[in-house]
Image (cartoon, rainbow, N blue to C red; front, side, top):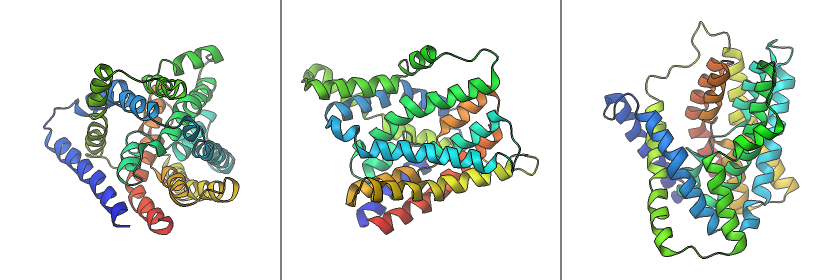
Length: 308
């Protein structure tokens, strides 16, 4: 149990450093964007490649991936059915709300939590792979269908997914593991070095993003949506993940804890990015990200205490 709290302490210590850096403006006004781009395009793909190339492919494509998939789609369905008549939102706003309730921050927070709390980044890899390769493309297609007169084709969606550097890094690592290839040391060393930049950079960027964030403004028309999405993300999503993991896949111990902790992660920041891209539900996404980011701290600690 001490190791779990120690892991959380490490993660949040670095986030607090990022908050201080952002508050003081030490790295300038574009620090968060630059660090996020560094992790997304360079460091995190290297880390995923390194991790998956040394992993057991069957574990990556195993029950943790299926728990993430089933629980996410159930949460999206429940959110849409619950709010369809209650809030009377259009399809685009409903989609953003469903994404906010079901999409976890598996990269920026999930990877550090997997390393320092769960002890193995491999626990985050199946969730990252599912969200990048399946959930996000489907959500973008839904937003596109709700906002465009000429929706994108399946071919373009697949093509866009395979241009995502984190998907490329993940699939390349899986391919190396499946073929049991030995990476030459002259290539392995720089990959390992770049991968080492991923976790601190993403946590510092995460801390910077918390500066001057104030959710639930009185003028916002989405406050009820935010509260429902946040409650589903922090409470219902972990409960559903627990039921699926424990009673369908019969997971126990470390794998069960991992499935629930991953579901307890806050809303992914790319939900806000996607909402901004389509200019739909932007405030809903932004406020849900912030509230769940704060609320996920006690939620994940509670999960660790109960299931450790």
